[in-house]
Length: 497
Image (cartoon, rainbow, N blue to C red; front, side):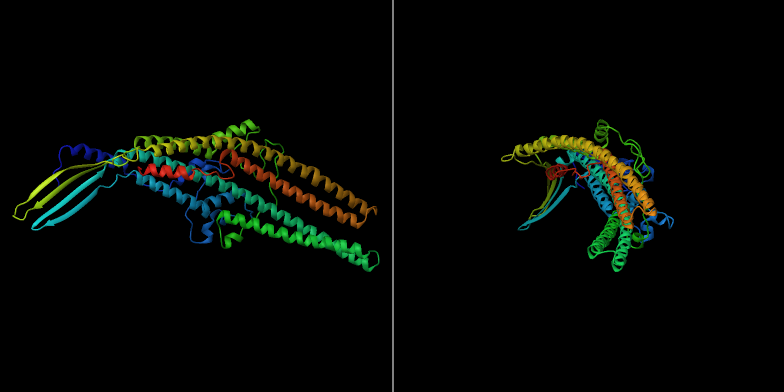
């Protein structure tokens, strides 16, 4: 054992303290609990019921417990679809795996840098010499609290990014559910339209055989039949496409992907803009005016919080860069050399060694200028994200209001009025005041009106989901948390360079 000098005792005490303070371990649940706390009720589900990205099980029945627990005839609700997606989506599991990597890097940053031991054996004639050097990275030791704090902030950014992914997946799943239900409804209407076209064509053929229809009139009915067949195939394919999109977002496969049923109808739209209808996420309340949604977006959006945290992170890294502008490595070593001369005996010498870079060519001005530019960039980004949040909130509120108005008009002025027309036409047909062709024409018009109402209802629920994501989660476009230049700067600072 080396006989250390008294001067080494403060260094050893500092090293021991840093080792005790810096021995951190990754989170046992890979920070899923922290992400759940951040998400809160932004998914439209109670926070107590969230189970985010649970490990996948071995069979399909266990891969979707919410789906397996449904009664055979029970349709899949939007809330159930969101629960399944949050618990089993590979997309979210990949995002949380990246969060686990960031947490492991945080734990690694809190570890004391390993000392370096160098050994050498030299001979000259009959003389032998053994050199031993134990060195420590003093700058890495002194800057350990800085690196721990910076890496902790990096984990906070990663948690905010993962929380945004959770909110985005929940919103995407709700949109996919709405589209899938609406597409199935449209396919039913297309099938009804085909039935009416087949009846009309068959009647036209019989009337032509009887001499009451000419070839032109029959060709028009046959053209309507061809269009109805094409529309049905297109609607059925759209229903399959939207259903498969929902399956992908939920992360289910095998029999579970085909074993669920969807509701026959979308939930009704609310009677007024401020009301909440059946099927709407009941957790997050929506303000009714532009000022309210702006304030809620600035106060609750995760990407706004992430941009502010990133700016503080870059500002602190700027201070570190200035402090280590031209001294980026300091090493202290203790050496002990033993020599066995050719004539016999043994000579031992020991001492300290200090290693410092000589700032002849690089005084750190370039690194300081780069750090200053990155800070200005992050500050501008905070303003940009806040501006975008306010604008998107106003736009989403206007879109929801317009979609609600169109959906109500399509139902009250479109479907309701068309049904009155159809009933009156049928009464006149019974009284021999209208022909069967008038009845068939109004039936087609009713089918078109119902389809328009379904699509308007779908657009409202999509706009409602967009608004809830915009005011409480993040931009639907998915703003990146860190630019590549800022990310590289923070990585370099965490490594002490």
